[in-house]
Length: 179
Image (cartoon, rainbow, N blue to C red; front, side, top):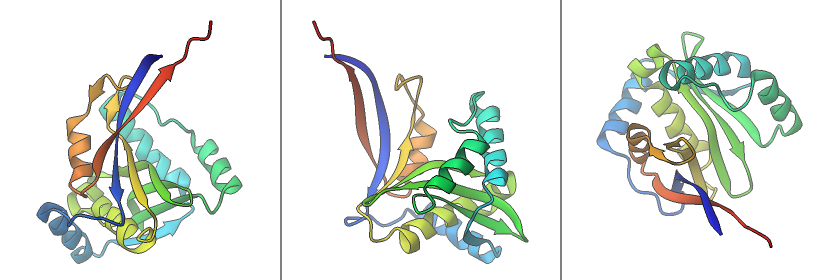
């Protein structure tokens, strides 16, 4: 066996949750006071614009899926691929695309605009997902916090997930040589 890569993902064990950090609680309270509304929506194009801009600005990369691919997947699997977004005065300011399975909800994409960041909109989205939408599943997976096939740990990204009391797990990919 030859180790190809090692990715670090963060997940919340929903049956054994730890309390939120004070910073997350404060941010959620701020979003509620600002009148942020969280709801499920089918505005994938609007969300993917936000996601694409963040990935370009921060990492010089693009989302794994195009907007057309996300729409196609969401239409093929309407109970498994969902978008939850935060709105301020009718404008989307944060959101998360969730890939669902029986026992796991996986946050494939999470993004926020500068306005959403300022008022804690993404924190409110995540809190809504954990406490209202997915409280009965086994795990909420925030996804990987590594870059370059696991060679670099994005410490800021994993810290953000840990503030929601997610804990790290390792996913190894091996190459098996058959002779």
